[in-house]
Image (cartoon, rainbow, N blue to C red; front, side, top):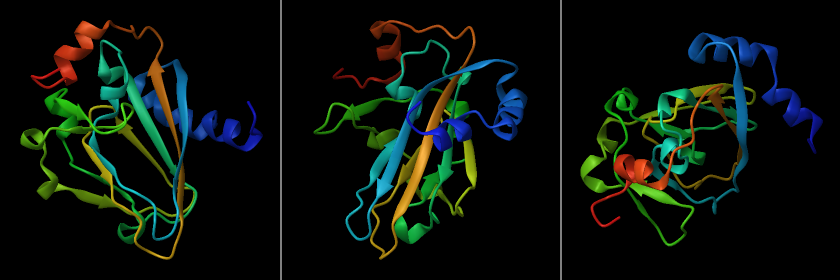
Length: 173
């Protein structure tokens, strides 16, 4: 609501025509984020599944939309993903030093199969909430900014902690 340009991007007819094809008619924007990696100091975002951060009972009803505001390239922390991992369901994650930051447990990680997704400003990547993905640190002299939106299909059900635990927590909880 505070930024007409970001609101327009989130509500773009072109974007929602694509989302209609993926999710069907009707969805709710439930999260928006600014993703900023300053030159030389932008940190990594560890391997994770976005669904691990949300307690929806059916992660297939969530999509992420990642829109590049600057060029996103391998040397400045573009998104990297492992194709097809969304078909394998939720995998255990462990929390890092920040409760709001988790990573896929090493035994479930297939980083050797990763594919970097280079993007130009205005490009959008629409992806399943169970897709394994990561962004490397920004070691370049270029900044890397993006916005990300998460949508869920109308009718999606928010679950309880027990259901979420069964999908994403490791044996230590």
